[in-house]
Length: 256
Image (cartoon, rainbow, N blue to C red; front, side, top):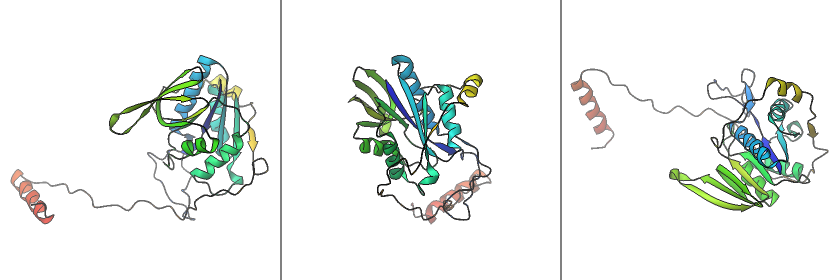
């Protein structure tokens, strides 16, 4: 089985103070740590599980700056066989469509049975790359996938819908799956495997290797921190005082 996994290196911003840079179009990265996008780590693990069950090879690909090679090497240490970095520094501003378009051009001659992405990247939360890439490749796809079972030339997948509903799909291969976190338990790479991966080749693709056809993409105007809304009012005092204040607020808001 030939497997492809798309990976992205993203800043870890959940517990960090994010600041906008002088250009207004990027965040200050100096004090942020970077790692593999969370959903992508589940996509990689799912590919490894499929390889362990059916055999085959895993190719990991990332559109990123040179430090994205660290993420690709972790993937190689976990069990990927080949790695490709598309040189983001060659292609200017990127959005979901342009990213998917570059990935498609880089993979146009790469045979696959299953292509896996994370359902979303934590830095932009666009949910776009997987579905757009599938459309450009002309392959069937499913998003928010929580279970994959392969039987012959068919894939049986469960995907999460609103309200806790689960949809079951039968799909022909090759296919693209944007997987949900929780589909499996991602493994850690051993120290020995990391050392071995340090010497493995990563194929580089730049503007001279990928067709320079016209690509429609959006333009980022500026980034900004969401404005703070009205804060909650903490009421103190005796029960009578709090009750009176509550009743007064309800009247002020026109609720009664």
